[in-house]
Length: 302
Image (cartoon, rainbow, N blue to C red; front, side):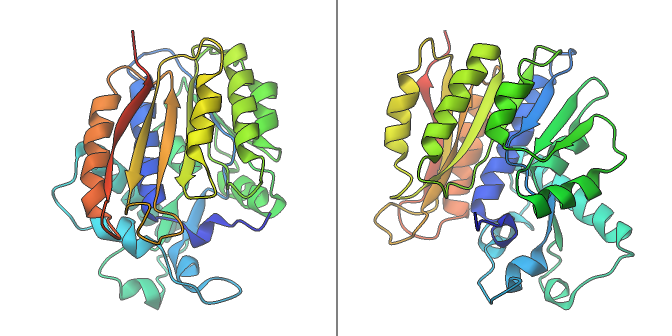
């Protein structure tokens, strides 16, 4: 597998995914009882955006200026995006401090944009309560090692160098009997959707009330419509919605024209604010005509 998320860190997909993730965690935390956060494809946890700009083996165009860069200095953000931007700001500040405040010229020239960007493990860890805990899975050895190094000594967090789909079978149900499972695969394997559907079937069998969030790209290759059909064929599928962001219509000529998250057993009341956020992001992050966003229920709440 050749995928390395550092090249895509803080792009439009990360904006939607990470802002949604924080909203889902906040929704679960309206109840006092703790929960498990399981991240099946955790990556290395944090990224240096100067590497995204230059690459490590070849020059490439950075994606974050058209994602996080578009909203970083705005003062009209929906509440969910304000929470997200402040979380990124806090991670950037703490990482700069840990590294002795060193700045690189590429970011010094970028109008105050951050140099260091948190992945989903750091965003989740930062808001966990004492009664919550997290398991981060990453099967790529170098990424897992980087993740383990950065989280060494932190309580309530466990790093597992293993396939995340296997972890769904191995770890659920948790002792807490509550969980948020983020499935965020690279979508390089031809059978990725099959693996996702299998993980959801097994996860719901082990924890029917668990919250599952699946990130997916909107591309010609991804065939998300086929995924929906497989999903809706699952027995006793709980309430679920998709929150999607299209940065252009599918006829705009972009390889990836959007992304979404499927949320099964969503926290009560999360759909409306996420719908508002996604609709706001459409024009804000547009890269062509037809940009839009919103929440769509697949199985409505009773």
